Image (cartoon, rainbow, N blue to C red; front, side, top):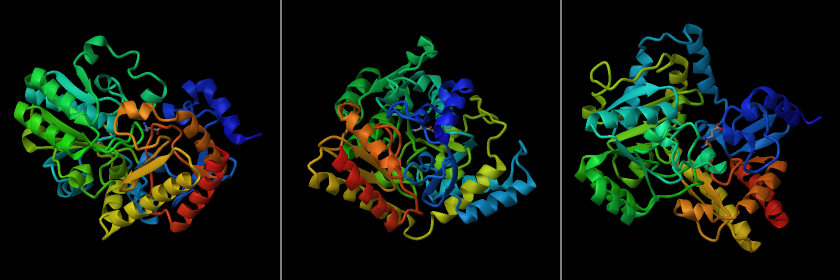
Length: 425
Ligand code: HOZ
């Protein structure tokens, strides 16, 4: 019997939905989730020993590819000295110095264990700093699963048709205002009405949770100006984009600086780490200095920080991001060209090493445009590619990721598979 099927059946008996994170259940695309047992470079192997080219890369962290020898070596060495102290270490200081040096707007930073913790904590600090309650987010942006942020969220919340989650108290959600992405006028209107009551605006500066959406420059710049004018804290959620779309993240790429930034994924090199940072004046609100409480036993975990530091060291090599973007660009250009030759309504685009695949005539710019794309064709395409050993995100609403381990050969193999898949559509 197919081992993936067998494991999924068993898992469903004792793990809700058979998975530990909803998108993995293949609910959006249908079929059986793949259970993986091994990964190296750009490749994955499932429990049936079938090989795949990986375009998820653990949703971003594996920017160097899987099991990079230098990352594995440092993880092994550090694990020998401790798995956790629950006390400060020198590596945490080096990590903080590295983040402050590389991310243009961060003056001080605190480490946590996940992106959800980072965004949840950033919002608490922003509320404490401004003494205001209202927060603003954008439709289809996903910032982890803290109660206040599960309002009109993207990613799994979107896939399962539940823009908000059950279990979120009305009193918590009522202070979360949502706006359409890339709609400058709606932004201005809201600030005109309520600007002086808004604690913060949180945004994915390039969205990776409703497929890939690129911000309009004017939209980001207006957002910056309005937040400054009204004393609202601007938070860039760079959990996905940080160190990926450019070394200094989306804020460097678009040259718009937030007051606070949340990070995750790449800074853990594949182990659980998150971070939030920003202006000293805001960050000094945090305990033990200030009145905003935030804490974590595994925060700054030595092994995770070591994996992240080695990853950050390696991605600072000259031309790293140029090459990553080039490789990703070859993929999206190739796919778009094949689709065009075959007369299929499809397009693709990338920002650095992050990409989107869209079954629509033009790349979407907002949540409504993403929702209007042809989901059925995506699902068919996904399975046709999967059969041929190409592993894209199992949902039309997720972005894709390329690593430095992906080669021209990987891209060509993917394009050959796409030729077959588009023909069969
Ligand atoms: N929320 C993640 C994608 N945007 C999926 C996380 C996972 O399944 O690992």
